[in-house]
Image (tube, rainbow, N blue to C red; front, side, top):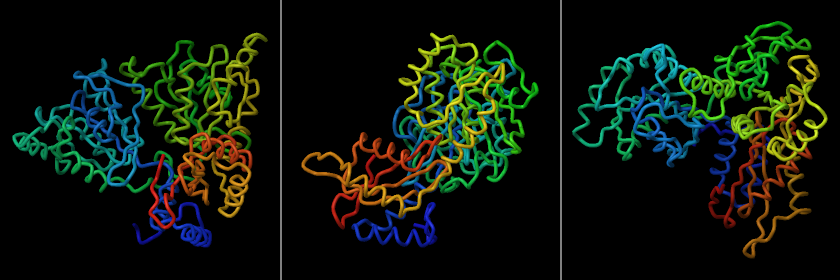
Length: 487
């Protein structure tokens, strides 16, 4: 516990009143304070796991997150659909970015290693650099070391594949890399990972500073254009900018690196990030396409608003939904732009509306614009939609007003009785914004359906158009007893 209390988004007076309420209900005040601070921090700190192929990065990531999610295969170049996971160690939560599975491209090993590591550490707060202790430091490892030094991020050196005392000497040789103490680890068996993670927590910030991907708050608002390849992201950016700033080609995947563009619209300067299209399956990508997916994920992490383009001439796909999920999980304000609207006939428009009803439920709260990047149709509606989403993303509900609302909800729509008990929401607070984050304190476990009901009513009452809502519930099992968190 810090001496300086973390009030999240609460002012001093509001915080004091809230803690008095928590005490009356019999909650442990230190844990209530932790819950507010944790929810108020917003984006979790990011740890990137980097290294050359086949040194055991994915095995280490699985060990860190405590489950087998990252695909592991005994050969270099194995990739996966998702490269970011949430982990917890010693009570602290953080994100882990697994950069395993890249292919050596035609530009040679040095360029390949450098590109991979560069994209991985772009949004990282700290880095675990994995080296195969049995092999020792290679030229490729040295290339990564140079990049890490230039990046200036804190680095923990993991000497992997040390399965016993005999391997400790191999690990000691890695002092020569100049990155400080090598931590001998067997990611396969778990040996030494605790000490390494303790070292990670020493260099990982408790929470990121109020920035997005290193961009200080207060500058131009950052907008990421994301979507499947060839949905018209570059055409949209060119139309918004009223000039050809980005190469447009009917060949899908022309864009490889995001292009940041400062564009003035309606007297306001915006920073647009044109991202490479995300292909159907990351594990089918090689070389530049795989890097492009990582780079797109990094662009979303940096942005405040994600404008998700959907190609209306094609059916809404699983990949469209994956991209939406990426933006929602990143906690960004969201606008859905249905592109190529000018190409629709009446029949396709009818079926599209049915698809939107069934396939886009998870973002039914997001502003929608029907546009044509080619003709400029309805482009004037894009900025108002972005402003609406940002307003929802930044909305703050005072604790008093929130609790009056929760009281009305509990009275009018109590939680169903389960096992002879009826859980109640006792009180709550909005601990943070960007996106809005709520902590509800309850007398028992709240079912998923009831939580969804609460989210729906929060949106009806307070707006929150264009933003995900994060709602966590803390449960007090018995009056006066320490409560425990249930998800």
